[in-house]
Amino acid sequence: MKNFDFALKEVRHLARLARLRLSPSEEKQFLKDLNAILKYISKIQEVDTEKIEPLTYFESQKNIFREDAEMKMDYDLDLLIANAPFYDAKKKHFKVHPVFGK
Amino acid sequence: MMFARGLTIREAREGLDKGQFSAVELCKHYFQKIKTENKKLNAFISLNEEEALESARLTDQRIKKGSIKSILDGVPLAIKDNLCQKGRKTTVGSQILQDYVAPYDATVVRLLKEAGAIILGKTNLDEFAMGSSTENSYFGPSKNPWDLTRVSGGSSGGSAVAVAADLCVAALGSDTGGSIRQPASFCGVVGLKPTYGAVSRFGLIAMASSFDQIGPLSKNVFDSAVLLSFISQKDLLDATSVGLKWPKGAFLQGLKNPRKIKVGLIKESFGEGLDEKVKAILFKAIEILKDADVELIEVSLPHLNYALAAYYVIMPAEVSSNLARYDGIRYGLSRLSEERKEEVTLEEVYSLNRALGFGQEVKRRIMLGTYLLSAGYYEAFYKKAQKIRRLFTEDFLKAFSTVDFLISPVSPSVAFKLGEKTKDPLLMYLSDIYTVPVNPAGLPAISLPCGFADNLPVGLQIIASHFEDYSLLQFSQFLENLLKGRL
Image (tube, rainbow over all chains, first blue to last red; front, side, top):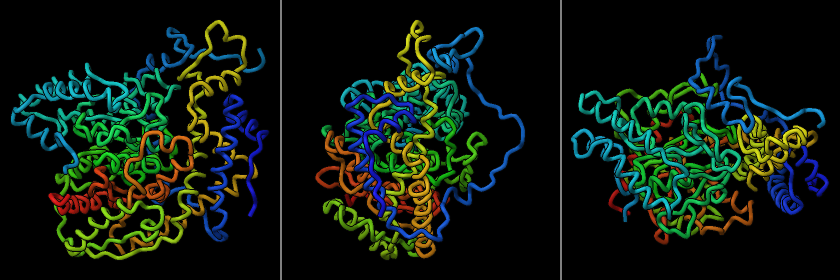
């Protein structure tokens, strides 16, 4: 059975992908926790699933259609906008940070 | 010993209709009780006093006119704080949403309001419903009313405590891997996880979307049936919602022919790892069923032992994807002041806000899910887990071709001590071993209080086939009646 092991380098890479700035103590903690969890979940490798199709949804969920019409939703736009850390209440838009560079 | 104390839905309805108390008086009674009890129990994160009393006044007017909306009109309920209620804080137990005010009602909240129900407040939970004890809540853990040094269970711990301590008549929770059933078991109340698709999740803050389901926690089976009948409607705002075909007019008719019922005991769930005292209590209830001429057989589900491992692949994968939306731009915590805003890039904004706003368990699951979905591991883990999901789901369905219901424990133990499992995440995960398989299989399941071990409540899990929620409730009420006076 293949071994799935984490190294500290991988923890840092994953944190970057997940957009989480981890402290050095968190990195060490997660290295330990994730290796233990991975070891446990790797037991699924024992099962022969050669001819088994993955179950991604149930029959009852198949092809649920609705009218191709506007969905009416009762929401409060002012409340919605005001949840943003930076926003313009008058123009009703969010303020964001620069995407490229500073 | 008695389980649930305080008012049931039927008793509240009778009291209101006979004028023994007004809706406003009932509402005030509960707020008074919450204010004295919540300090020690920590069941509620926020209260909804003004709006609740206003709704109660409207109920009283309707009662006077003889035009009540439903059996729930004026009945005080609590809802888990991952359900959006328009204009109210919805924190999901997290620092990242501690000031989030929902701009709309979740569909279940809308349906309860339309039925005239009063929403007293929002109950405590593990952050983003990730946990089995509410110890992952940013607002501190809820305490078990039977023993304040013990956990309430989780993640719907606040709702379970509120019902058990009679701080509301009944409550809603959500269940992704046992989050309604396990706290219900630990607190000695009824908790139902409906069939996947029975209840709309619109306005439920998502954790793992292919498993999440909203359901009731209550003082008896009848109340869970009443609540389910109001919330299980098809909703265009949740594409997975199909609703339930509920027999009209009758919330719960008695079970006609218990002699024709066949029940399977899940062999794999009564073996090693189950506390002996808990096992003894469960078997007492099983003997009572036998005495009532219910046919009992042992059933083996050969792939069940892989269900928890498969769940801990699929669930974190969905978590990492669902929680990518918390970027500190449109909502959520942001520690960056307006002045400093120009100094950092967007990516740094995301990473900082998420690092500050999420707790340890949430970060752990996001990291794990990110790993499991990355190139090279997807086939070995995610796809493999979905195949195993089919195997144990088919085990369940095969069993339901010969039996009507399956029985297992809810939890391997009674409520554990606060702090007992917080240092070892895997140990905490294993406490959900009997409840987790039900969610990937999409089945309905209930936790029914069936006795006490060391003066702490024990729940029995009854599982039914897809969309058999009504017969599951009928059978549960049948057993509930058999157990009355024998606890």
